[in-house]
Image (cartoon, rainbow, N blue to C red):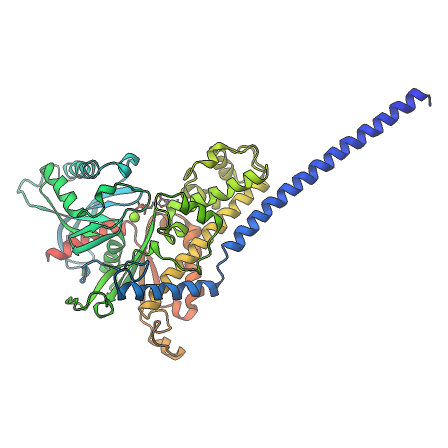
Length: 498
Ligand code: ADP
Ligand code: MG
């Protein structure tokens, strides 16, 4: 071989070696980046861990906080609000009634016809519209004028001029925000939640605001009841099945109510009701306990929200927030590795990833996870391999599993407080044999997250059995109540007329 040829061969070898070195280097770098991402996932899993022992601590904390909230005003983060609802609908109600429901994302209007028998409940029409986002931080007048206008249009369509006898219409106003009631049909707004911010309305009588707006439009309609959405769901549950004593909503936000003995409501000594009990609106979204598994993502989400240091439980378990927790994890992975490609600015937009999309990704059963790819593309993340798509599904799973399991602990906490968890409540210990005495207990559940996100629902129901045990679980029935808060509120206003 000539000198030139040798030199050439040497250069070729050096070049090949350096190409190999670059490739090995790249592979090592990519492995390192993958390791970073796996570590972030592992940390998330650890921080979101909810073994049954921890859930039981949450159960106990919920029951203790319920006691504290009933004992004195401001005694707990749980407001345990009086609703002035002591009798729930029986099934004997008659007539035509309306309900208007202001939720966190949707408002609904409906009309029901009742024939005096439980089986004769005719929900004639349900209109459901997203709340125009500008209303959420407008003025009281703008919000209520809009609601009155929507009601007027609904009535015109429904009645088609058939109310010519001039019968006054009875309306239930289902309002999914904390209210301090002075009667069943009046109460003032305590604070906004779920991103609403119309500060002038805090301290205002909500039913009166709506009545005035209806009067301005000359609508012959009377706001006969101001009803928390959970209380509406309880009413519908009870109407169909009198063993229903608890209702929970998992929608944009989350909350629960239950039937409590008046003598247990210590902060209202001398409270008299014919039934001896009253529905208490827990406002459980604001529940907090050091046993709740909190991550750095939760802390940041809270700090950047419009209601920081508030509604800690709601921010871990409800539809408004689950998507944003998942987004924060993806953003961090994207910042600390390049597995999602160049950092997409869309990923930095708060609430851009909706919980609806989280469930769509989580439940994507296409072989290549095309739905995950499509949603990531909307977030400005294109062409990620299947391995990375699987990672995203895993994040959704971890966040939703924690939510479902904590939701179950919350429900078990209520059952414990009222002695329906098989333990005899938190004040007395009962023997296992007495579990035979356990009463059948129905928990009415509604809200878009519960109704539409199968995995959330399954995790919740599975954890409830885990916490209560197989034996006691047989007595606890979880019943889905589609549109329960709106329909049930109409039933409640009907029960006040009879
Ligand atoms: P509101 O809270 O206004 O009363 P809903 O009870 O219908 O309304 O809840 C709506 C919320 O439920 C949505 O904002 C979303 O967070 C959640 N949600 C609705 N559909 C789904 C879905 N398919 N998957 C996951 N979450 C959903
Ligand atoms: Mg709702």
